[in-house]
Image (cartoon, rainbow, N blue to C red):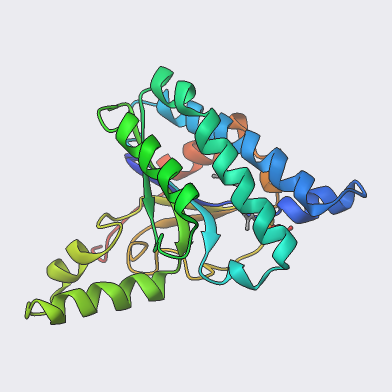
Length: 224
Ligand code: FPP
């Protein structure tokens, strides 16, 4: 049976979830935050899952209407401010991947604060991808090696990435079958699972079913 240590999720479908109900897209993001909380808590209770990496805001998401981008920033700030007790209760260590430079000083402070407060938690490490793009991550990593005159090898490049770990299982919700610039290097030998469920409807029960499916797959890592 496969061991699931690192789960990554492309959380997609918030907008469609809201539109289906005749609501503004922002309602879908609000409901999506509840799913983030539920799935994080659930993963913290599954002993073998050590790391959960979630795609929240890509380097391309700045192209969305300004109102939606501003809403997402405020929502993220509210979430990070409110969730500290949950992270402490369930032993979740909060981390980010991506380039935080374009975010406001206020938001970066809230991000740093939650990282600092949760740094000794050990049940689950949660990485939230913010202004993250895999191509950008790889370019930044290569440039940092070149700057320090370090030879680029598989190991040195992996270690220079924001997320220097491989992914066991990658899930994308909402029926899209794309990677959308997420963890291109880290998914070299990952198992993929695509579900039609929209992110706000994704549940711990469905995650358990997907994990069962993953456990019974044959992983060969290039061998036979
Ligand atoms: C995809 O739905 C979702 C996003 C681009 C943002 C994900 C954000 C959240 C789940 C909420 C905020 C996150 C945190 C961690 C507080 P979409 O808008 O692309 O939906 P669509 O494809 O149906 O339009």
